[in-house]
Image 1 (cartoon, rainbow, N blue to C red):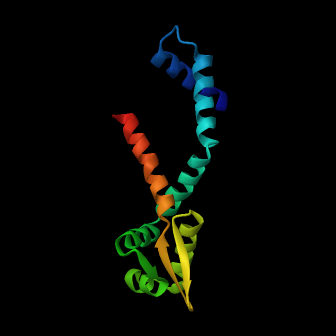
Image 2: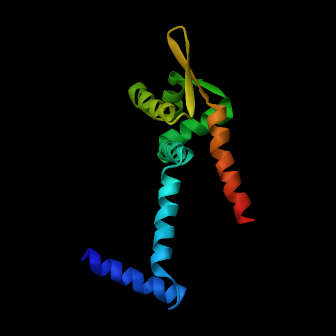
Image 3: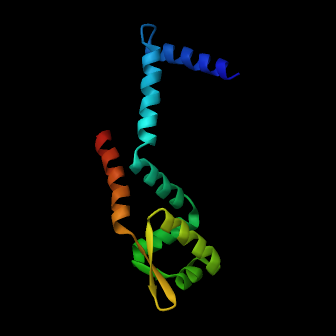
Length: 133
């Protein structure tokens, strides 16, 4: 079955690129391009950030931190109507993705956006936009 799919893909590629196209070179170039991107450390870090922000509550937390600059878990529990363990779980995911940082203040931890990481994330978007124009 896999071989049939590959043959269909090659047939479609030949139709798309023309009969004189070097299909082996095109396939090799595509494979090399994918590998190069996947092996880039900024790609891996961006992927972690995108995954962390793809969940509604984490995106809400992130957006609230952008707006308010610093918040405690107790504030998030009120704002989102979620339990402390749930908020802690989401904040841990955001910390693991290098998007936020927790600062201990007595018995409380206050969270902030990790500005350098976020700037790096958005600079990648800027590079993409520059390539599109």
